[in-house]
Length: 424
RNA sequence: GUGGGUGUAGCUCAGUAGGCAGAGCACCGGGUUGUGGCCCCGGCGGUCGAGGGUUCAAAUCCCUUCACUCACCCCA
Image (tube, rainbow, N blue to C red):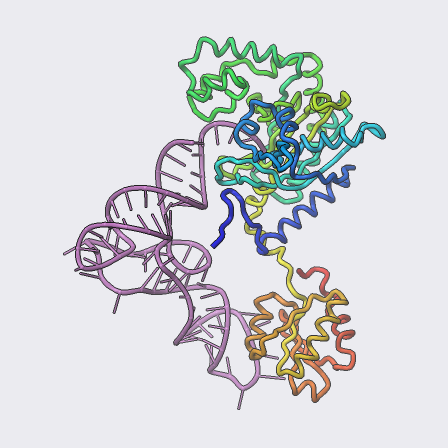
């Protein structure tokens, strides 16, 4: 028997209605905020990711699905979306007509990590990116969009963390300060941190080992070392968030995994999740467009981890399942033939209709109507054919009434349609 | 890549001094010769993850392997 590839998963019919619902909400919201959808491919040249994410990051070094295609090119299944969006923005010169662009994209990403709760090798992200604007209000607006989305899903136990990572002006300065702080304390850190100290010192703040956490308590904070422009930017973001009345926590230990981030960074954490508790994350990446060969245009964006979001919504899936409006219980071959025609005509009228094809007992058919959650059952056997009227039963009130066969479809549509608005 | 936990019916899981593979749910049928949910009865359904070993006898003991899962790493 064939099985799923490790770390990959099927999203089964029981869950797809919920996925569609969530995607519907976010699409509507994004478009209200002025975003347009961009559909990008799943494959890119490997070099794109090495240049954007950072050649020495774990993602690029050991997690990408990279292969050589038959023409000899090195291609990679995208591990994230921003690089592709930027590539597209540059390649099609979307900035030429208007440098200010708000783009979103939804789709799967691929990273060959060891799977665990909330982490898959193929996972889904909703990405939103804004190009061409330096204004800190744009950062805040993006966060507002994200939190509004979370709000609409009625999630609780959610926290927003924000930080600033500075810019090429002030971050190197801070890195040096941090390095010299760490210099004399190597015995206080775990082996991972000692490695991080060289590769990406900011990552030390991310360590989960209690001793490391404690050892960094007195470490310098990037927020104290920001240059004047970055400080002002961060203050403005906070002021806007306060204006929106969005609660947030300033977390100077918040670090991004990808190299391209500058200034504002943020993460949405959910305490109902396990170790992988970040539902969304993002920030500003002012140098990326230029670094990838485009004009010197700034960018801000975020990614929502859809799989993790779904984990938080688990249990709600059932209420989004589509249920038939009508189940036709037909008894005997003659009535089945008539019923088959009615089913098609009713569907043309947008009445979700099901019937039985197995010539089963009325009891069985009623059971099935009930199981499917049908709003109504239409019962028709030889007796009804003779009398010229079928029985329409309301499955919740149990009320029954005769429906003349000559205009059955029309009458059923009239009878059922008005009440279907709220039914699923 | 590292460490822990778990693999028995479609699902959730019982089942060790080694001795005929079980329950609940789900599914199908019946109780009601034409009316669903509750109840009752019956039925369907398993190479006990895989391979090897010990034994008269292995779901159970031993070895190997695979998968799933949680955590580390890394990250949405």
